[in-house]
Image 1 (cartoon, one colour):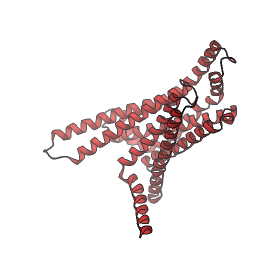
Image 2 (cartoon, rainbow, N blue to C red):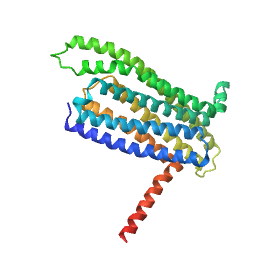
Image 3 (cartoon, helix red, strand yellow):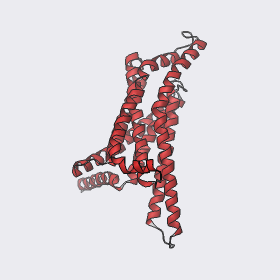
Image 4 (spheres, rainbow, N blue to C red):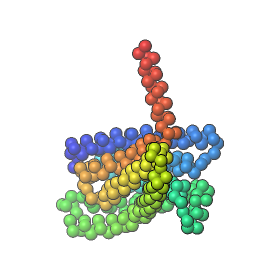
Length: 311
């Protein structure tokens, strides 16, 4: 049941999604422009373009899904439309999780000093492997999203049907059977990129902390700009990790139907899922001077135009 507080949270989620669209649009524009100017596509730009593009479509899809569920409820819960929306959402969601995981993995291979032969081999060939990793993860996301087209509508019907229509004990049995199938594919689609992201982030934070200690041991008493850069990088990676895990927990709660449709709990999960990609993109823009240039340039032109009109 939609309450006033749930509606307020959902409104905040829409605002967060719009902020995420602006952030991801900025990253996409800067990365694409850089590739066009240099006439070559680096591994980093490739990841950023895929990540920002997938999140741009994901947050647009989430906003459309939310609008239809609020204002076109009868049409939205028709079998075909509901299945299409949730299946496309799972594909975009899984792709976004994978691309974020590969970004963390890319940072890890570039920063962490490996001694094992396998990691040295990966470090040397990451640029040639990255296109195949992105393509493979996209196909894997597509494959793990397809089963949702078969079972998710049955799960939703059994969950939302009133007790006068569906016996409560029978509903629990049907829910368990359908959810078991969905959870298997859900775990395959979102747990693997979570593992890659968490392991890469922890290794990256550990390596940066070791570098900071080494620089502090040889410090002469002055503030080292390199140490400050490392500390800033640790803060960014740690914030990425918190946002990624928060998004994962909210996604699992949504997919497991832990809350009634449009309840306060579901609204809060939706708000978190809208805030995390937006927050991630904002941290990426804040931590990269090249991404900051475009918003600063737009703001400068806007201020100049406003001053010209006032004069």
